[in-house]
Length: 229
Image (cartoon, rainbow, N blue to C red; front, side):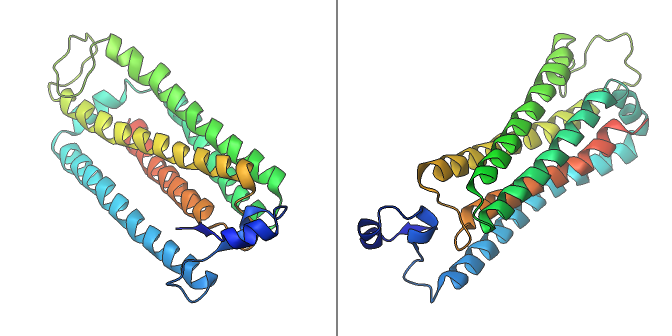
């Protein structure tokens, strides 16, 4: 997706990476390369939407068939932790957008600060999900597709609810980790040679688009899972 013109690098060792960037030979100019990369990434995001669409369809069908089971299962979720995670992702969505804006303005310091905040938010989201939601439920024997001994279980089809819950939130949590990995790589490249600046920030913007998708999916999951009752 990106190359560095080594001949220019040798002649101007003090220039940042974004100034030394050379677009690929099969593009007419840097603008065409940026548009092609962004279009390709939007197509990839469309396949991600199709993935989560299947989960949402499963949710809709099972909820229509077992509304009492979904309502009973949702009572075991803590809206507080779901709400905190929602705020964490909304903050991270703002900071990743600001990091792209800082790249456009060549503000390297705040580009990195915003990326670091975004990455910390990603790991905070995952920590809250694992420590305060998954592990307590696993300790009670509440697992997907398994009938569990729970005096508060309100419907025999609750395992169906938990299968949908763990499937949707588990795949989303995996996307959070993937998004964090992409942003960490962007941060490393920023520290290494100032790779992102006013004329070149393609990878950073695409990583930001991926992170926005992660945020949007959670905006749908939160009310569907936590606010049923």
